[in-house]
Image 1 (tube, rainbow, N blue to C red):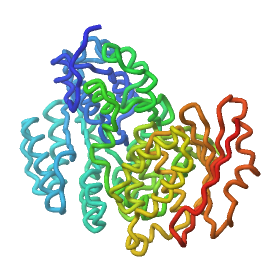
Image 2: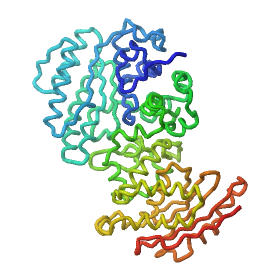
Image 3: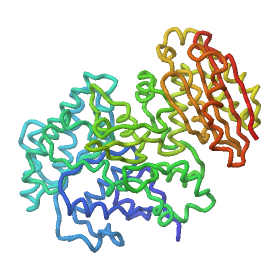
Image 4: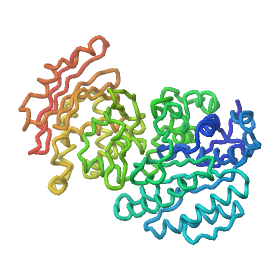
Length: 515
């Protein structure tokens, strides 16, 4: 196979097909959607290929056959079926007030009028949108198609200002209600964005959307599967560790096939370097502040149990932590289970990139953005590699000693009991170690298994004010955590770490090695 251009940042289907870029064929999903329904909603994280899929739908429904040569749709689509396509996108720019959103809507309505050769006479944006849909059907002799990209961005951009966010939500709700009222003139509707706002808050006038966000049939609608990498991108794999690619970037799942983040994969192939490409492209400060402000116990994010209703709870006035992390792509579905009439989901980190980067960002927030955090993390890696336990005690003590006293006094984060265990866990997780929290609780206790360098470290953290001296090592032995690892033939180190909330320091570190 010959190498092609990497479609980094390319969201135009025609450009990809005409200029010899790699393309993962998603037209089979498009055919199924069109054949089986008419009104859809899809939520996926940013930079996952949503815009490209929408553009693919536009070209297919417009009947541009030449772009689909060799693809699944080529011989399975009636190319005599041509529909007028109306496209709206809120991805570009930031609207900070309702007037700016109104102008953005009018700007796009004007673009669509010009493209379709229609001039609206209605004076309001909602009226013009409805008129555009009606007239497009009359002019083309076929019902229209409406595609909306980044439908929620004007709200998400203003979550820090709830009054403005509500105004944006209300303005968008008025716009989207036109789609429901125009149903007789529409053949196909597809809305996509990052979040899934409740139907009550945003789609009260559009309750006929079929939500395919968590549908195993469409889990791989965006993103690349294992087979895609091996078949489509085979020329790019030479010289790269296949297992390392999988560990870093695979693992996103919506109850079906797991997928890779396409943005990560393309930048890896381009640079030949493993980095947190996706996470580095503007992970919202808002997210990290919410996690810290809600006293989120960091180890709990390894496996988080939630139900279907909570996973979909997303609105301006309240955003559940689980919904926020899932919909933005920082947690994904590990598996689903049915308990009677209740559907539950177990969430996890999708891959090494997200786990390491999110904990690194959270660590900076938990430690007041202490400037020595990166050097201390690097030192932790070196000390663990050398089994320098005396050095580890000194480093653990330095973790908290380096935080200014004023930060403790002025920041309520440091007052909750899980704070100390969360800081330690975030240090280990930010380094990408193989971690397993054995027992997590918001009371500051953490039994942590670290597998590294052919050795196993069983670590327990205790607050002496709650458990007394010597409790950490005593619990490691009493619980028999080492037993299940003895047959692996690797050295096992029991590490009991005790710290004092009053002194804000590590007061004891005991180590016992089992061969």
